[in-house]
Length: 425
Image (cartoon, rainbow, N blue to C red; front, side):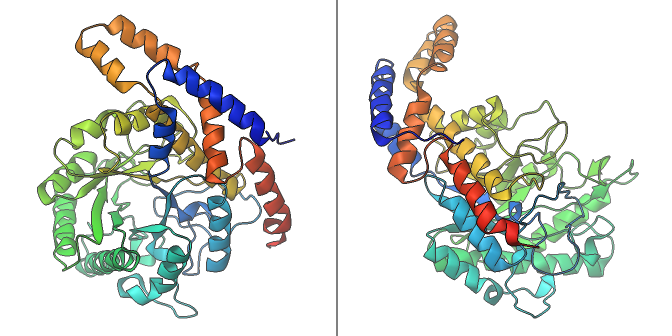
């Protein structure tokens, strides 16, 4: 049902592919070696439908929505880690795990979000180290009684606003803890759901309060080499259709003014707007950016990432401009209507395939065509490259990385579902 190729077939196809790409001046071995060094940050929340481990509601709410009830959702930290390890065993290349604050390991103790501490994430650091993973982090500004009205850092109630400021400060310290423990900088990304469902009269006051809150959070003494701060914009959200306080313009200005990372989420803009076109513009003014690679279908629906034209365009902008050290690639989607491990693997493989396609491009040749005004050759060659045997290179890369080739991984996920996931209530 899930076809497998033998090693000899893979090697033979790879030999033909190398010859085909060499005719365009592309060194395939160099491309795959570069691909292996690009980390992708994979989000933990696909594995449990953004529920976390604080107890309470099965759905996070407050600006997020996960649909579906496929069997086998991770219910505990151990289950989530086991599922994540299974997904990682099917993925080639370097990876990171992206955690939300609501995934704290507090045992049986109830710890509110403004009181979380590095000790509540020590087991995550130990686990990440054992699995050779970097860690990225996110404050959780949703799914909490103090976020029920849709406002957090921009709240007009000073007590509630201060609570969320304290949460943000705690999370930055936890991010630095991860960076120091793993000797690998942690990106700590702030996203809030704050906004109005219907047309507001006063957009200014909430944005001034948000700026004040961010200033207070960023004023905390945190190791900026171990923790990289990012802020994430959005066009609209559930319950904030008419006005999002943390808009693109707001956060872009704040990031530039304070030398932070700006997070661009592929689903957070107008349905016909793409983030690939924004990368070079923003990196003209910022040292680094964070990407949340998602797939919106008519809205910010966080569908599983597939090898789309926009995904390829994102990868091309990163590779063509030598931005692999300036762009932090993270995934952000959640689908409970399909096997959650398959969702992780499908999305992460798609992202890495897009990067490989970009690395297999004869960029210098194409750039010369463009500089010479030979747009005919530029367009024609870009089209011809699409029919080169990329699949053979990908299969060989997976083989050398020691992960299943082709569709074989699907059978492994189905077996894990039968052996493990189906036994969860």
